[in-house]
Amino acid sequence: MAKYSKAASKEVEASMKKMENGTLKSGKSGKKVTNPKQAVAIGLSEAREKGEKVPSKKPSSSGKKTTSSKK
Image 1 (cartoon, one colour):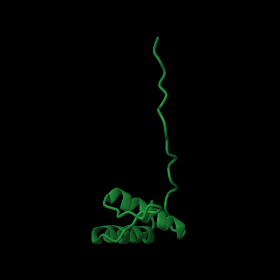
Image 2 (tube, rainbow, N blue to C red):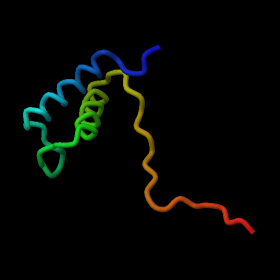
Image 3 (cartoon, helix red, strand yellow):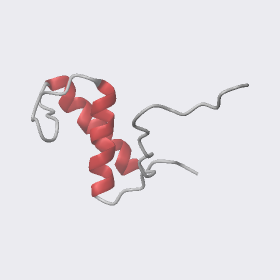
């Protein structure tokens, strides 16, 4: 079973083309996107907004990871 729908991959493809043309802008700041990973994330986000089949976002782990101390 496919993880992503065909429509979601089309959305990612479109955002990659926009990035290559230099017309893809980031959200709040409006800066030009040059990182391909960011372009993919924008494409998936737009597909998610349209209700396409895209896995939910993973929770971000901010801060330090805790490790157990060995005694």
